[in-house]
Image (tube, rainbow over all chains, first blue to last red; front, side, top):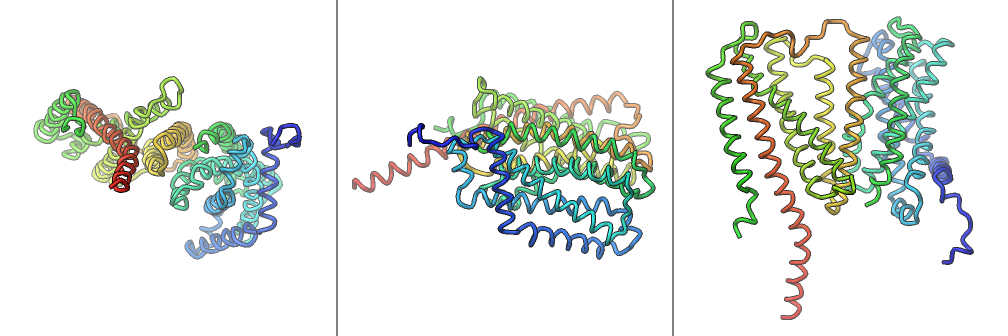
Amino acid sequence: MSNADQPRFAGTTVIGTARLIAAKDLRVELRSRVLLNQVLPFALIVMVMFAFALDSDAVLERVAPGLVWLAALFSTLIMVSRSFAVETADGALDQLRSAGVPAMGIFIGKMMALMAQLVVLVTLLILTAVVLYRAELSWAGSVLLVTTGLTATCGLAAVGTLYGGLAAGAKGRETLLPLLLLPVVAPVLIGATRATESAFGTRGVSTGQGWPWLGLLAVFAVLFSVSGAVAFGPLLDD
Amino acid sequence: MSNDRATSTPFTKGLGFFVVLGIALLIILGIFVSPADVNQGESVRIMYAHVPGAWLAYLAFVMTAVSSAAYLWKRTRSLTWDRIAGASAEVGVLFMGISLVTGSLWGRLTWGTYWTWDARLTTTAFLFVTYIGYLAVRGLGGTAHQRARRSSVIALLAVLEIPLVHFSVVMWRSLHQRATVLSPDGDIKMDGLMLFTLLCGVFGFSVLFAWLVSHRQRIMAMKDVQQTTAIDVAVAERLKEAQA
């Protein structure tokens, strides 16, 4: 193949690749509906199971923010597995790499697609908490809640993509991924839960007390987005 | 013949001597000679295994991080660094486990509880799990250099992760503290002999660390050699069969 008749391809720049990969992942999701038909119902059933286990309206109302984010973490594990199962099924990831597609672009693209799906998931979980666990939402709380949701999902998507890429193609990846991922996302669980508590006004925590936690989430998201974009190439280059 | 199959060298034998000396001294001082603590009673003796164990684990994890960075840096890239990183992590996980168990036993005796959500304890537990994950990544397979690159990146990510976890736990505890968290070291006035025993432990465990890691990384090197030569040996055998 000569260079002259090769069309200018958006996949040669990092941003172009990222956009293509993200669009491809979301298109795969739109057509397969795995998120809609499997992950979201799973998250819902987890929320119902929490209610069975805790068995008290007062307790549920008190721990609702934590349950939202726990369910989000469990679902993230499934979504990350799914995101990379698509890539490794036919050796697609290896082919992308050997075609010279920049790893950073793949990382950013997959991260964006994952984040988009996580935003849908977390939105649904928060609505579930409002309906099932009687969480209260105020206008000031909503602003905090939306920012928290976006920042936390950004961090989760970054770490998920990074460790998902590492576990992809490895033997026993289903068991390896939770072991690697859960300890790393502990700060997200702590930060997002506390910020959501402020947004809901759980235990009389005011909205203002949630913003420092948002700072923690932002630091996490930035650190792991940047280090993920840098480390993804060396992790894949086998 | 026997020499290149053994993992001991004059250096490790010398180290081994000091290990035996240090640990023997620790046992004698820690169990028989040193006095029981005024407040903690006999349970203070757990500290002579607990504190050096924790020290060794932290030392090992720092070693893993430094060796991983040395592997990733092009000028010092060598599989020896990777093996040192792996061996250190193994020893670190082992001693962190020992330290967590002895610590919670001591806590039960002294504080009346096995565990408290103190920032240092929680971070330590996370370190433990993180390095178990690191060891799992080392077991993923592939060539020696694949393993080395993958695990060094994971080791450096752990360096990034741990301060974040620690910081978030500190923030969590300080904003939501109900009971006063018992400080693990408190304001214990240390008896001279106790301090000396503890120092013996730190010395003994540090030499033990060096001894374990140097043996372990040589075993790893032999495994790598075996893996690469196994194919050559098999090919040579099949060729011989074909010719016969």
